[in-house]
Structures are given as C-alpha cells and as structure tokens.
Image 1 (cartoon, rainbow, N blue to C red):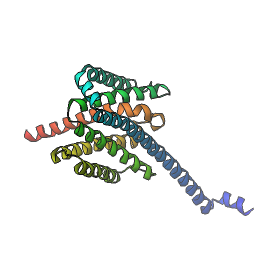
Image 2 (image 1 turned 90 degrees about the vertical axis):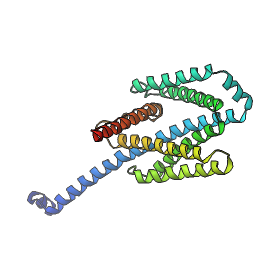
Image 3 (image 1 turned 90 degrees about the horizontal axis):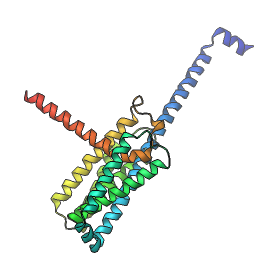
Image 4 (image 1 turned 60 degrees about the horizontal axis):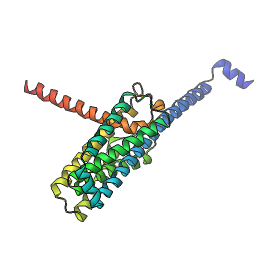
Length: 255
C-alpha cells in the first residue's frame, strides 16, 4: 500500500532512482561505445605491426644475404613490378573499401599488399645503403608496436599526450640502438627519427579523428584488416591536405 501510494503521489525518491538508472544506462552505453573504438584501434595497430614485421624480416634477409642483395640490384624490373602491384592493390582497396570488409577477401588483400610492400622495400635496400633502410623499417615497426602497447593500456579514450609518450620512447630506443651498434651517421639517424615521428603523428591524428567522429565514421562496420591497407592512402591524403592548408596560410600572410 505504501509503495502504491508513493507511485500515485509521485514520490521524489522513485524519480531520483529512475534518473539514476537512466544515467547508468547512458554511461554504460558510452563506455561500451568507447571500448569498441579502442578495440578497433588496438586491432588496427596490431595488423600494421604485423605488416612491418614481415617487411623488416625480408629487409634483414636482403641485408644479410649478399647474393640476394646483388640479384635485386641487378634486376630492377622486380622493383617496378612490385611497386605497381603495391600501388594498384592499395588504390583499389581505397576505392572499394566497403566491398572488401569480409573474410577471406580482406585477408587476401592484406597478404598480397604486405608481400608486395616487402618486395618494394627489399629492392630499395638493395639499391641503396642497407643499414639505413633497415633503420627506417625498424623505426616504423617500433613506433607501430608502441602505439599498439599504448592502445592496450587504455580503456576509454586515446589521447595525444599518452600516445606521444609511447611513440617517443620507441623512437629513442631505436635511436640509441643504431647509434651504438651501427656506423650510420648521426644526421641520417636524426632525419629518420623525425620522419618517423611525423608519420606517427599523422597516423595518430587519423585514428583519433575516426574514433571520435561518430557521425562520419561508423565503427561497427569498420574492418581493421582492410583498414591496415587503406590507411596509407588516408595518411597521404591527410599530409597533402595539411600541406595545402600551410601553403594557403603562408599565401594569406604574404598578401
């Protein structure tokens, strides 16, 4: 009787309980949404790290085997064929990204792109200084690995400060390793480290923008396997857009 009279009279305690329950449901939905986005970022970084691990292994094989290094240096058609396949696969994946989200098509695209990218990088190492090439790919692989570690330590939201801390640690570790154990000049190590940091910033900005744009990017339909292929074109377009904005800003200041 007391409970029924409370309902009829509009007991404020029941109203507060309803509001509290609704707030809890909204908060749980918010947490679940961000958990899904963090899981997607974690899976995306793991696929990119797998790509660069395969590339680094093949580059190290080219660096270690002088016969293979000499063979790739002499047969330049392998480089142009691999480059054409790599650009073609990434371009088609970028255009038809909504049609390649299902298995096994996404994994076939991922493997073919990764192998062609490894072939291109191996040929570039054979054409130039193999130690510098190895430094480049180890640097990029380490920053992707540290971004993966960072995404594994968070539950709610990716932040620039935390990601920059992890990326800086990875770049400094590689910097120290190649400074101590190789004879590469300090100039090249610094240039490659700064380039890696710029790539990490663009990658982080791209991921952060997608994870926090609920209207323009549906995380429920996103595929991390094919996304690890199309993200290179996304970063290139983002870099060109930033360069255009800087150019327009300088032009307006000049006027």
